[in-house]
Image 1 (cartoon, helix red, strand yellow):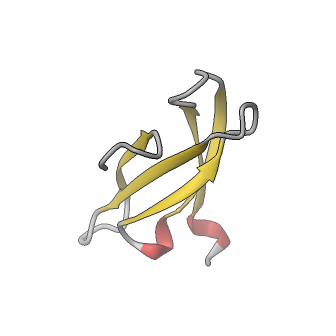
Image 2 (cartoon, helix red, strand yellow):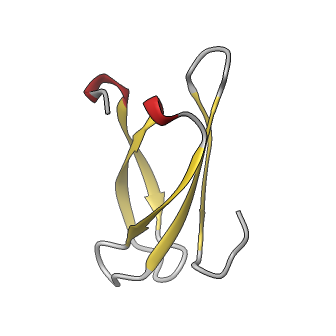
Length: 69
């Protein structure tokens, strides 16, 4: 992981609606990962889409554990 590729993004929990900052690692390219909500501890599915050309974050998708991302 490259620290310069870690960026904080404001997001809302899809379960309880709590807003928090999510650190996203763009050095991994596009991927799906999981993070627990800091308030309700529910498992949040996170889809990270990174441009293959520029390496920039294109889209960040959050869903419940049974959502298809």
